[in-house]
Image 1: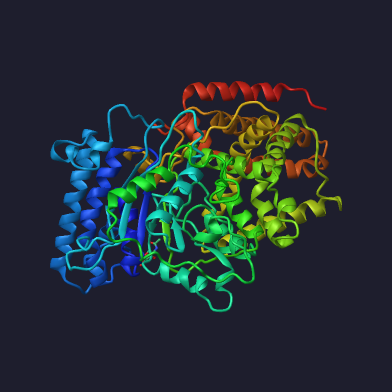
Image 2: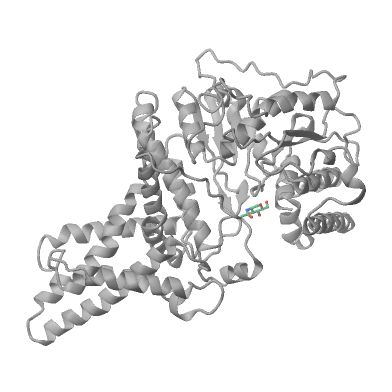
Length: 618
Ligand SMILES: *[C@@H]1O[C@H](CO)[C@@H](O)[C@H](O)[C@H]1NC(C)=O
């Protein structure tokens, strides 16, 4: 349902349907996904005319129907009831079939479904390209007789002995299939969980591309990523808003983030920008109307075979780049280095809405993958300072570095959460006394960075609580995700092991979702990342209690306020870390639900923290 709501939302764009084609890449090659799309195709015959007649927003049926359209619209309630009924029926069929796990009855023997044979497993299968709605076909019309957009299902060939290049490989397969079937000059790519929340997005993006003065220089128009399931309390301290409202507008160009982005097909396919460039693409309406869809499908299939890309530029200087878990960033960078301009466009009405992880583990794994991929880019020949030198502005090179250097930030953070606290416990002062003038630069740095980040948050409409969560999560991300990202990158550079692409699951069970909605952090499992978090939390608790007791004892013994002044910054730092770790203590000691931290992990963390406290320091 998630996928077909996205599909329906983009099929219903306010744009001439004969110029719109939607391609769905199903890398899992599931006949259930195919079935859901067949359902979506028939539902679209009702949904699209409904949207256009009543100027519906947003055009994801699920989002629209759950937004309470009854209470706002002035329109026909009979039509609303009818569309709701159709949607519910479709939902029941799709969910019923998903529960069953197989396609039953007549459908199974229908054309299309027969391509799923019992031998094919995910990862070892033939290609499937199936045109579900053929926009050329005069029968492909909605209930009002208007043409429908083309809808195509694509599952590329996969064989264990050939690298599949993950999302980048799938995207490139789609680019080729679409060039055979519709060959439109502009491509929008969206993740399956990210529906279009604004029916104007295509027209908006085209305003940039069609601009008479500078349109021909523009390669892509990137919309920001927005999430529909973030809570106002923001427990995972997501700072996407800061990125969208402050960092990306100041980037100078747009960083391609892999979803919600309109591309000029030619630039994505490797073309260099030149001053004489003039749009020479024609929308291919001159396709041979006699040619049957089956012939077209067969030709398209040959473009998504495992061997098609051998000895071609795909993945190197055409399409999405290969060899990096964050292929989007390199793809965008390499397009910019070919002379194209890019636009970051953040309209007031959020245009694309995805989902963000609701469990801490997923969240941290996602950041691990990003930080690792981004750091690899920095160490590769694509490092913006080398690759982009003389091609893109220094400012843009530096803006990229802001993200590419996430992983190494883990080291200073790890130092600051461990060493000053341990020193506090042992009574070793690290920072200048409050009374000393050397204290001033420290105080300045702390006050300036924190007040800047607070100002930034409030300016973006975040709350004070949300800001605190961001600070807390920054520590957690850097000590876990970024640390693992760094370690993995270094190991791989030295030739050990290769990185697996860990997909973040977007579906969590209902109980966990309730706990998330109630604002508690979802741990729920053992993970080396949680061990680090718990160890650091316990270590700081011991150091804080022990350290403060030590200071009090000295002061009590009459040895003076010098000690207080000497240790003040360390007490403050350690205290803040303890305060920020409250959800971890809760997960370790107080919670009984499934989202708590496992006991075995607590024991492990306590052992490690005790060991660290016993290390002699001087
Ligand atoms: C999505 O679109 C609706 C309807 O246009 C709008 O009210 C809303 O602000 C948009 N954004 C979100 C996050 O729902």
